[in-house]
Length: 418
Image 1 (cartoon, rainbow, N blue to C red):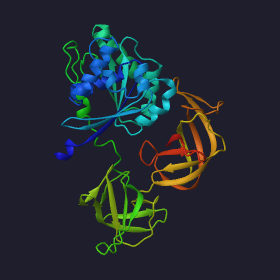
Image 2 (tube, one colour):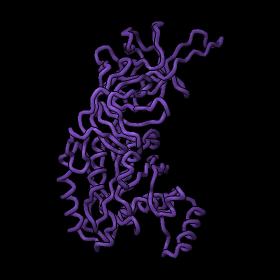
Image 3 (cartoon, rainbow, N blue to C red):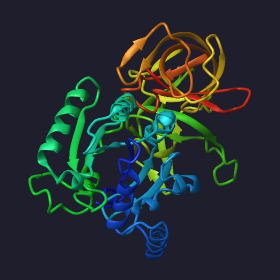
Image 4 (cartoon, rainbow, N blue to C red):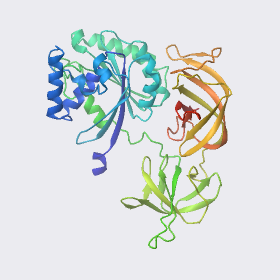
C-alpha cells in the first residue's frame, strides 16, 4: 500500500485571465492544510493593505512580484503540496495568448489538465486554445472547472449549458477523459469540501478527483524503451568488473533475465541485474531511474537505447513534427538547429514547413510559413544521426524533442513526433 500513498500526480492549470486560477490553487492549498499559518497571516495583511475584503488566496500563488502588482500570472509557477493519499505538483500556467509557450512547457509532463471557465462568460477563445494544447500534448485527463458559480446564483442551467458546449467542441479534439465540476474557488464550493449551495451536483469535489483519478496506466508499459544516460564504471576493488547503464525507463517493463537489444549497434544480450540506490529490483517501469547490467560485454554509451528485439522504435533521420515555437526570432526554413531527444544530442536541418495551425479555428494555413513566437506548426526535419523515436501519442517520452539555437544555446521549440 505504501506505494499508493506516494504516487505523484502532476497537473497543469489553465484558463483565461481573471478566471480565478490563482484563487483556486490558493483554495486547494489552504483547505487541504498545505500552507503555514504565517503565510496565511502575510496574505491576510497584504489583502487588508490593498483595501480588499477577506483574504485574497490568489496571493499565495502569485509568487512573482510583477504578478502581484498586476494581479496576473505571467510565468509558469510550480507549486508542491501533498495529502495523505498523493503528492502533487501544480504547474500554474498563464492565460494570455502571448504565453502559449509557457502553457506548453507547464503542461508537457502533466497527468491532468485543469481548465477553468468563468461561469458568467462561458467558453472563450482561451478555453479552446487550452483544450487544444492539452489534446496536442496528449494529457490523459481533462478537468473542466466551471468557476464563479456563486456569481450566477449556483445555477444548474448555466453549468449544463457550458458543459454541453465544451463537450461538443472536445469531440473534434483527441481527448479521451473529460470531467466537469461546478465550483466557487472564492468560497470553496466543491474544491476540497462539498458545496451545500449546489446540491443538484452529484459528482466529486476537485480534490477528491485529483486524489483518486487513475494515473497508473498513463505511461506506456508495452514498448520497452531505456535511453542510456550514463555508463557506470566505479573502478574500485569492490566493484572491479562492474559496468552498468544508468537511465530512466521511458516505456515498458524491464525484468531480470529479459533478452534485450541495444540501438544503434543491434547487439543483443540479457539483463542480469537491475540496480537502484536503494538496492536491487526484479523489474523496472516508467518513470523509474535505474541501472541495468547486461550479461555480455558490449559497447554501450550515452544516447544508446536498450529495447526488446521484437519491438523496436522507429530508427530514422527524417522526422515529421508538430512544434510550438518559443522564440521571438522566427523559425528559419533550411535553418540548422541543435536537437535533444531522450539522452541523444544531434543537429538537424529544417527541410520543410508543412503548415501553420490556427489554434482557434484548427485551420491549417499552408500559405503562411512564417513561424513566430507561440505559433504551432507542422514541419519536417533531417537529423545528423538516426534517432530512436515512437510517435508522441504512443509514448510521450520517446516522442518528444526540443530544438536549440546553436549560437545562443536557447531552447527555441518543443516538438512532438507524428
